[in-house]
Image (cartoon, rainbow, N blue to C red; front, side):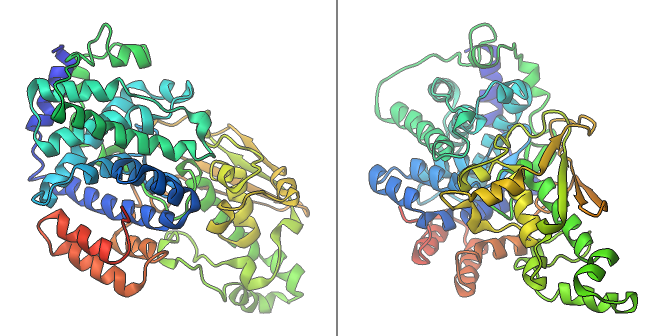
Length: 480
């Protein structure tokens, strides 16, 4: 066993999170968010087709379904998605006696290894076109499985080795079913590696991370030492720093800051003196009454709105106006390279639109808020593409660290008025995280209130994972 692999094996074996409630609390929220991302996807035709094809392959199904809508969490160091792979793999190898503590510990270990690997290979890995949810996710899945099932020493090294040699996933699949398939394959391949070791006499290399010819050198063309791992392990933990980005809408997390900035700008335009006067022909004394009319219809997810800004409303639905009639151009400002994941500037389908800041900003300015159903349409109308062509990306914000995100949106109206907003900690970001009530609302997009109550009660009142899963199945969630 080489020194780097030995270090990773030692940390997987020795990690104790008993006194790390900070990590455990994030892991709990992440699991509920994972379920809230999985549940609405289970009725999607492609998800149902895959379920019929793969049969009882839980890992592949759960990974594909939980990432299908791109509603699941993401992490900056990884430049990919933790929970869709890790929880899918862990659910597939779960045993009836497994406790919540052991289940969450395994998730934390898998996430820690993935985040550290991501911090070492990115941004080059991402810019080369790899999708780390697939390439790194399978290694994290193996680490999590090894931790849950109590593998040690060379057996654990061989598990990591079999997983590492199955690294795959390329970012050209964004906007297609190939992208969520990466998550499913990563989870499945981690489980497959474990089953090969458990049920066969196959052996494999115990030097997957050898500095000279191992995974880091092959995939990333970099040399990694034992200290690179040891100095980062749970200091303070990848779930804490840089932390998880959780979503309130199903689109790429690279667009979250821009979406919220567009919401603030839209609200500011609709309630500005010039706009109210133009469209309602009111005197300045009646301006406040006009503003109240514009906010008559609340955001359908008020708890998820940005509470640090002005109160959000679904402005267009409330006013009957169409802001794009008055827009001359929109500028979305990024730091250099920060929009790499948003690869479509003029998407032709709703799926592609999940990876387009233009499509997200178009929706916010057209409707006052993102409309989730628009990510499901087969063809985006040409008139909408014409509006999106007024949106320009520029790269005039200072470069930020890999763990930070910031976006500015400037909307210039035809009368010359300009409105701008900059956002770096939107709702769902590590510094403005979703809480348990937010997750309840996200679950409520699919489940009824009484179902959520029963699920939450089972989640908080069971020591083992299996009774909770039985409750989920009884409520019609987790169909495999």
